[in-house]
Length: 103
Image (cartoon, rainbow, N blue to C red; front, side):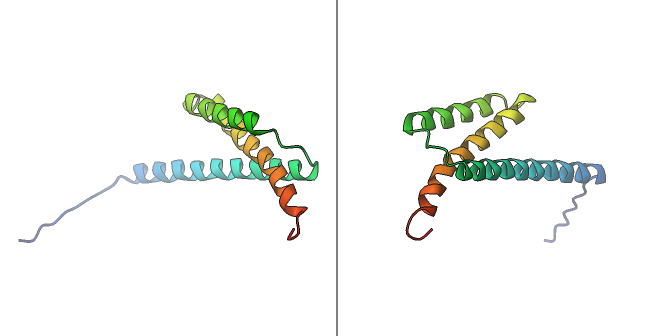
């Protein structure tokens, strides 16, 4: 028994899907670039590590803030704050690696 399955998508639907995907990847690249810039600045300025408690509170607090504001315009700012904080945390780790024997 042969079945013929036909699927058609509206061109407008396909274009809107591509637009959403393009905007998502653009936002991801912006947050990655911001995190890299923050990590570079933290490394160059030799900023100290914030400590275990502040790191955990900052990471989980900013994750919670990003989750709660995901549907609002301020959610973009909280996503950048989260990735910037992760970049800041990465700076002292990079300094420790670069000052070591293999850096």
